Length: 184
Length: 194
Image 1 (cartoon, one colour):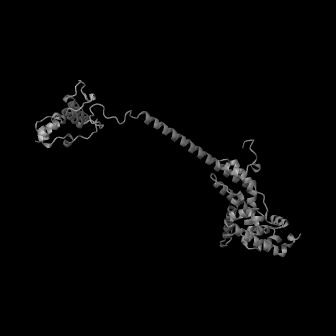
Image 2 (spheres, rainbow over the protein chains, first blue to last red):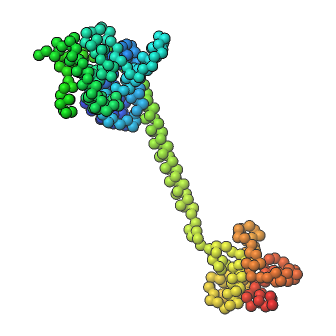
Image 3 (tube, helix red, strand yellow):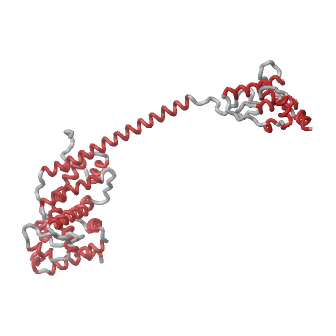
């Protein structure tokens, strides 16, 4: 790497600029994208698989998938919006393999959020929500996606996102276990 | 209504922080994982760069070859591709054959306007000797395979079967003489038929 090239993690270029550079064949641009989003991917994969080791496999698969999009990749929204369904589907694939290995043969298209390693009262409350609502709440408040980005990532109408979130928040507000967060 | 609803689609900051603390764990990524992913990416970028270079060089080579071919074709093109055979091609059809001899014979017989380039033997006069020269040349070309023109039939020459039989019976060797171009003039032909 040339001496004047900034370290990938500190690359000042925007995602759009990095994607354009990677499309032009610049491996440093892909490095920068990787370092910028690897922790986000691992965090999401850990939450979806419930297994930090499997999350590393998901991380590899996700970025190999992203790599396969170059050249010719067009970034039309934030990269997290593009990566979310990839991470989710890869995680589902890994969990399905694990379940088959363990003797389970149930098929599921939706990934329920497994309980964190250290159960928390809040995670119990979230787990009590319908799975579609859990996903929207976590995407909005943990992953930091906007409502529009959630709609794009989940390929559902924006109105459906709002409706799910509205119902989830109403349920949370009514839950006495989290009432303390609403007190002034 | 949507704005009102969106205002309600939020959580207290403390609850958001608590959610992030519960779910937003970011395990340390081993450097081996980083290396594996990034080296695979670099390999792929390098492979694509090589492929792009190969395509670019191939295209340049193909363009160069096409340019050379075009130059060769240009340099070897005929200067006057549509020009008829220079001397003796009376009807200017690009072929030298008995039809040209017949055409000149007819023009002579009809006292038509004559072109000076039809003086085939170069004696300064356009006459029966030039007709014979054309006939001889056309037969000679055919015998050596230099001319690919189809041999004219009797009908092409305007000669009936009776004339052909007469010529054959007279034992004149060679098609040029058997045709008897001088006799092939319209006057003599019509007399022969009569």
